[in-house]
Length: 180
Image 1 (cartoon, rainbow, N blue to C red):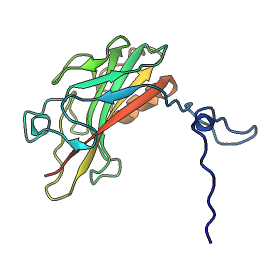
Image 2: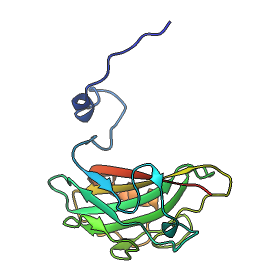
Image 3: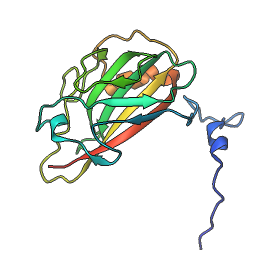
Image 4: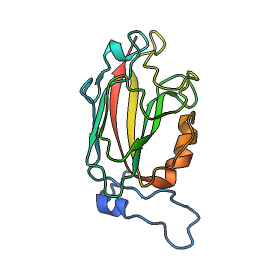
């Protein structure tokens, strides 16, 4: 026997706060508004061009975003493959210290502050999934932050997320696919 619950209105999720006395703490308020992320290089859930992979020129794809929320002072960008056969997936790119008035990244950019990817490198290293492992999904995230945090170079994805967690106003993503 199954029961169906009515859907939760999006404004209820957006404005959710735990009841008094609840041990659950919410580190960040959910904000789903107008921030969008796209790429002139590939469409949402489309194949990432070989040029932007480890089999090609290994240059980062161009990214464009719009609809940044009021109060945005800086941005951070992360590319992550949760399909990698590793406990925490595989991070391909960590970039931060992007000023709040920037709304795009050129292909192959080396501007701003580079973090450390899962290859152990600063900057971007593109998709290179194990041959025959099937389609991998590459999540490109942009985070709008309420401060320019002046973070040191070389943070990995988890360290960056710990540093920015209380400063994320909104986030958006685009997902690309690659398979070998």
